[in-house]
Image 1: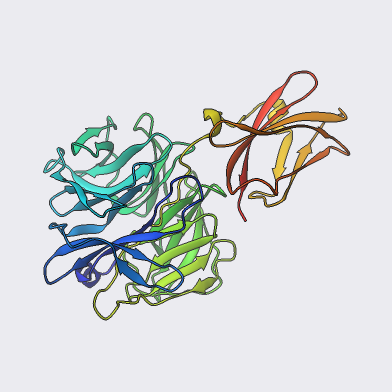
Image 2 (image 1 turned 180 degrees about the vertical axis):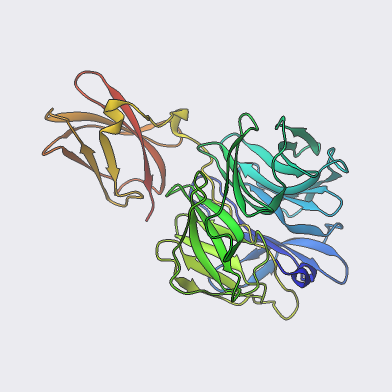
Length: 401
């Protein structure tokens, strides 16, 4: 956010997932300012310890926060200056591809996000206006998806893999939502607190389906966790007190299972904020702060598959009468059934691989049924509910302990 922070050494941190909510490792790219070469490294978000994995080899200095993680193919993407796409293998640290994007120099890449649901690398490509695009990571070929442009964007972006939306902040303090399917703008709303706060970063939480932001107060440059409504522009500050001055734009990430929002204060400290309370949980100092500074983090934890590709039922009488709580759940899940007068209901629990992991007929008492989930692993499931008349409703269930 401040110009001098751009000169600091870059570290991009991200989580690699082999399946939903499994891996808990953070990795990163650290750049030596003397040689301008970068290497893959791991970072412990609890202690701040940084460990190099590969030898320096990325010759093009990475752009600030223009990065994404592909947990399916175990690759890390970062856009270098001159719009060069760097593709790095997460396991070996080897550079797979280093090639200038086909859209350069006509377009500049403002942000990139990888969608696990459709295994596509999306980007915001900008001229005087911004356009949604997709990038082929094997050839660096860029395809513009938007037929018309939007207000110029910033490096603050995130993706909703379920609803297939790309969110990014515009340069005029508006939150823009774009359809990944059509490339068309869904909404553009000026933030309600734009006069007193800047937005340093945004992150979508796939577990509680909330769009979070790091809001920087203009009067003291302290940061506050907040919630954004992309359709109204409404901002709700959740942090009771501010923390961590001097945050560079886009330098944040979210852990939906651990309920942590990470951001780098650009003072060699990793700030961890509880998304439920907005309170600061911890702030470990990076272990090699005397050698390298850090100016970006990318802790990606996406929903990489959908159970049987089943869509959650919406806007049906039967579906709307059903409530699933708590979300996320641990050992027991309550199913509320409004206007349901039968004594039992059939339930199938479907995992991410499309397998029915439990099939049961649950008793209904006072409009409520209970299902035990203690044996289920953390992740996303679909509850298929069927009443005696044959009506079926699919409801999403998240298990996180």
